[in-house]
Image (cartoon, rainbow, N blue to C red; front, side, top):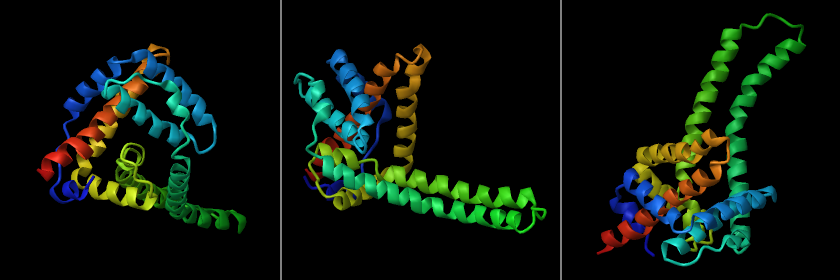
Length: 230
């Protein structure tokens, strides 16, 4: 599939539509999705496999969307393990690099304290750390949005190069940066609503949130991309 079409011409992001379509997909096999969520939690216990479980969950969403029976055991599919392993390494390195400025902000405080406990203006210290922390949050938001399409590109559209998946994801995501950020917040809120029901409801709202994200991925990467190419 040629994703260069939407990277050049852009696309629309209809949050209401995705919530509705995601709910319809979830209703096709509620029990199967709940079991898949339980298995995904188990899968997440294995180091580096939490992100793989999420990628496999999108494959399950695709099956349900196509009218196939949900096979919760597909969560334990290790076909894409090495691709996701390399993705996790990339994410870890980026996060560690972004943490470096915060570390350098704390170092002068430690040095001054060891030099005799001289008075340190807390306003200066907190101000310096606050600036770096604010910038860190901004960078993390930008990085998160840039990763928005990486998992569907790997799991659903079989892009097996982390570098290519990330490059495509960033090119597509930056076309609608603000709406993707808002969409992520909305889906995050929906996914966590289950906490209200003593936490048990999470097994309903978490898979629902994943189905909603799947609906967005399908619309942007497949439906709208095909329309642009016509």
